[in-house]
Amino acid sequence: KQKLEELTSLQTTCSSGISKQRKSLKDGPLKHSKLQLLTHIKTQIKEREHVFFDMEAYLPKKNGLYLSLVLGNVNVTLLSNQAKFAYKDEYEKFKLYMTIILMFGAITCLFFLNYRVTDEIFNFLLVWYYCTLTIRESILMNNGSRIKGWWVSHHYVSTFLSGVMLTWPEGPMYQMFRSQFLAFSIYQSFVQFLQYYYQSGCLYRLRALGERNQLDLTVEGFQSWMWRGLTFLLPFLFFGHFWQLHNSVTLFRLARHEGCKEWQVFMLALTFLVLFLGNFLTTLKVVRQKVQKKVEKGQKSD
Image 1 (cartoon, rainbow, N blue to C red):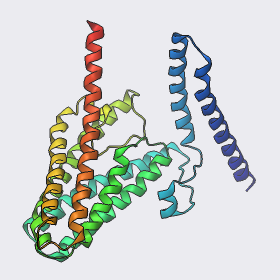
Image 2 (spheres, one colour; image 1 turned 120 degrees about the vertical axis):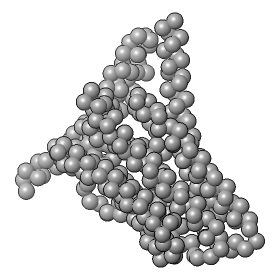
Image 3 (cartoon, one colour; image 1 turned 90 degrees about the vertical axis):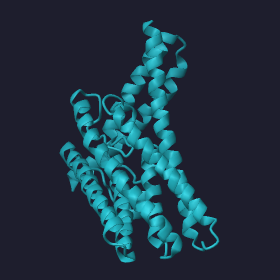
Image 4 (cartoon, rainbow, N blue to C red; image 1 turned 90 degrees about the horizontal axis):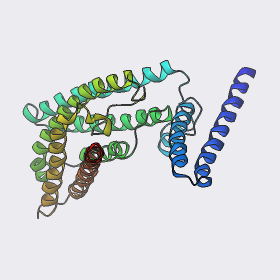
């Protein structure tokens, strides 16, 4: 008990020290006027921030709103590197196995079992899968994984979309969209499998070179570190993004149909549109930034 209290006290002191250092790093550059010195200080600040980030990964953190709602005030910080890596590997395997299961589930529903019950099971699996992903990702982020931005929000939106699909009652509107949705699900699972296979290999090489964090994860999109060796995935990704737009347009048309009475149709149309915009604009932003950097490097070398 005494050792536990000492550990808690030490963790609190470390957290307080990191907060003070971060504050001083933000205030420090304002006192320096020389450009070269300022550039050097900024570089050091970035290095320090990375060090603080790694240090904080081993200290208890207050759970975010989502984790607090799901798990309560439970400390989810893993205290050893071995435990963190084991949890990360389990997360990656879970994604891979569920992607394969969902692909075969969509194929079965589309070509062999045209029953509402099997569709409901498939949609429930999607809801459970995305809910589980969001919880596991939140725990990994608490332990130092650097997944952020749209790729975090993406799974929350996908959870909502799957939930709406689950509540969509049987009827003519549902049957009009059913085949298109299942075909999209098959393609999406195929692309996710491709991404996992090639991203995991790329991350392994970059970690060995010391260019990526040990807790970096595979994502269902395109990030800057994928530029070397994974650009061939871009056509598959963009095709999937525009398929989401096609789904949205189809659903908006169904929503205007005189026989449409379900609120799910319009809601799904909006959700697919949000997914398209988020995925497409985020991917486009990464590509644009990389192209600009290449142009700038070319101009400097000339």
